[in-house]
Image (cartoon, rainbow, N blue to C red):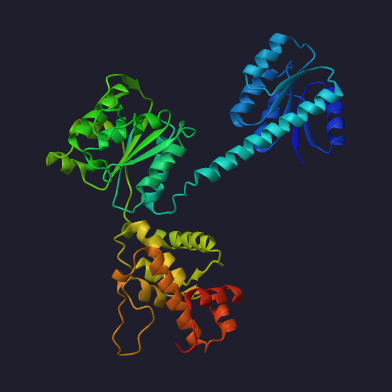
Amino acid sequence: MAKILIIDDERAIRNTLREILEYEDYTVEDVDNGIDGLQLISKIDFDLVLCDIKMNRMDGMEVLTEGLAIKPDLPFIMISGHGTVETAVEASKKGAFDFISKPPDLNRLLITVRNALDRGSLVTEAKVLKRKVSKVRPILGNSQGILKIKETIERVGPTEARVLVTGANGSGKELVARWLHEKSNRSNGPIIEVNCAAIPSELIESELFGHEKGSFTSAVKQRIGKFESANGGTLFLDEIGDMSHSAQAKVLRALQESRITRVGGEKEIEVDVRVVAATNKDLLKEIEDGNFRMDLYHRLSVILIHVPPLIDRRDDIPLLATSFLEEICNEYGMPTKKISDAGLEALKALPWTGNIRELRNMIERLIILSDKVITDADVKAFANPSAPMTAPAAGAAAPQTDFEQFKNFQEYKDYAEREYIKFKLEKNNWNVSKTADDIDIQRSHLYSKIEKFGLKRGE
């Protein structure tokens, strides 16, 4: 049930309001001054505050202002025996949900309380839904490098400073950029990503700034560029070290003047964009080699964030692996598997050239090919995608898989799943019940897999 705080220096009013609200099954606290009220607001999660305006120790308007500074989404209903239109307007401007005159009309009071509580619930739900929709993964890890990144994001996120994120491929640069956006005052706006390495140099300017109809052969209609699309939000320029010189010059001008011009156009368009850039290259070396503009580098690197490679944060691997395990098993609709301590140590010992991306792919492979508990033997057997699907006999040569036969990753997963199920069935002498229990899936699900892959005993 909702918790309501009453702040009023008249005992009779407090008792009356308490009696009415408790009769409606609300939980009620009351104090006779604003100072004590603010202390309670800072300690207890109230759903609503009823606050008198004229009080001795602290004026109700001050309580409203300071209370909203503590809990910005907390609804306030202001009450006063000297109500005027001006007072009601002032309370509304300061953030009050509504204003009620004394003595309060019972029906109006209850309706206003109900509406205020509903509004508070909607605000909370909206925030939860926004977090779900954004689907921004948490930055996992407790290593010194990751803790420093988290601290920098907290400090820099709410500012308008441009940020340059450096680090190897797969290390999580995009995730850092998304959290900078989430922590910024622009989080309600869009975050638009441009992979500068994936766009041909002759098209990058059109991609960034848009173009007018007829500006070049294939420009059959007007196009809005990424700078305009990101207006009011964040533009993430990934792999900016691969951007052409002409595009670099235009990006520099856009950052200096907050204006862009579409390709083939003459009109200058104002844009309000925060730029976060990322690269896996050493831009200072690129500047020396004449491949990158020094003035653009200084514009982009107001704040520098370096994301360390996975081999420099091996102690974070158990946390990352466990998180990926749960996430991938949920995607597959299967019980979450576990990794033994020895398995985690084996993971930590691997040479992670592909960083976080490689680790996630490895965990997905282990989930498909291993039993309920992933062991160090599983990690050693399946660490290399060209490793044998089953452990070879002592002294026998390891059979190799021809990966050229697979058109895509799904084909490879189906192949690996078929071979794994076939191996387990043969190991258990085709006892479907025992095999289903062994690989931790339902019998009906296993029968479906047997039919899907056309598995037959003795084939």
